[in-house]
Length: 540
Image 1 (cartoon, rainbow, N blue to C red):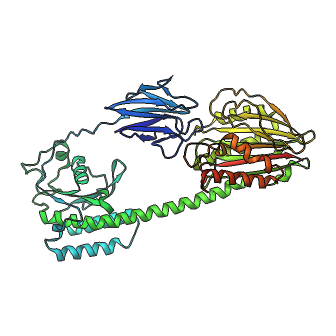
Image 2 (cartoon, rainbow, N blue to C red; image 1 turned 120 degrees about the horizontal axis):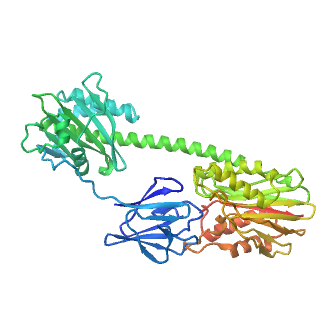
């Protein structure tokens, strides 16, 4: 199994499992290695595996792909321990070899197929097994809280199997087995019980129940160092299987006393109980997941409401010389886009639009931090470029998330209709003239704000709005919306067409509505692919 491990950048330690053939790296959510950063292209690069060897190919990305610090062109070899740099991410290739166990292959005295289709489990003493299973099902059915449920299950088993001195339940959590519950007859013995990983992994992987009647005296059982240290006399180990034979974990019962042992009928009994318990446990896990999802959904809805409160809607603040409208349409419950506007002490009107790297709650929280800093820093800035430089210093001084924001900041003077703009890595604004022509404001994008602790070289750009002219700021959710083929983007030319021409005399809110409708017609669906934020400023 080959994985990419994040060494630097967002989500340090995150692991990406690579496909056996080709694994695409990009910003699209559906690719195997999804890196949620605006510095990463939608289809940035790919890792190819051929005959056990790995190669990296750049897919024509904007910002390049680097292996061990060198920008690549075409296909280059990629070996274990090599580093891959894409945007703010540094990743390392790690090839995980099958774990080698120090325990020799075990020969178990008896084993039994623990699948529900094995009706032989119920052939011996069916009435007793039915009675026990009904009793356990009734007791376990009284709660859907997994930890108390597991405790009750083990208490039942210690009563049912007098040979058992201790019992444990291990749950599968990804690739790991984790002890979730344990019980013992020894008072005061609360430490974690040791167990043989070879035995529990065999029971789980093969879906079989295992029995050893006499661990020390069984000539067919090869004693490992682990088994000797456990001081076992006899044990039962059966898997917990859920719907469609999903591996949930295992139940193990240990006998430590001499002259005591589990028998074949005990293995059959425990396997039958595990079948019932597996279904109950999966129902409980499903119920717990639903509760967590509902709680998270409610928290996200509250976060969305709070976030919307930070987006101002008092558009009359711009003053009598102009009109303003802004809207943010989130692709998810919460957005990484932002806009804001406020009046400066000298009477001019400040505004900005931004797009935070990443998605979801982390981007939304970073957005609020950016907005708060912006309101704090703007009054002391001597211009638009100076403001973005100050904001970059403030964000990079303490930014453990490695998130950043693209932003256009502007200052409007209602006396003469002038606007001073500065651009930090954001798509360039548009000007719609009074006659319907739409122009791209020529300005250098500059460095993304908060992306690097280096001085940001930005300059102010002045544009003059004649009466009837409209300044249009937007996020890349408008440009990068793809059509029915999933590849061709809406692009700047279609956006210019959508906001210009016949839409020029519309009210600004109507223009924003028509632009959003044009995107929906192009994509063929109502769901947004990315956040879409628009700011329109028209001189009267």
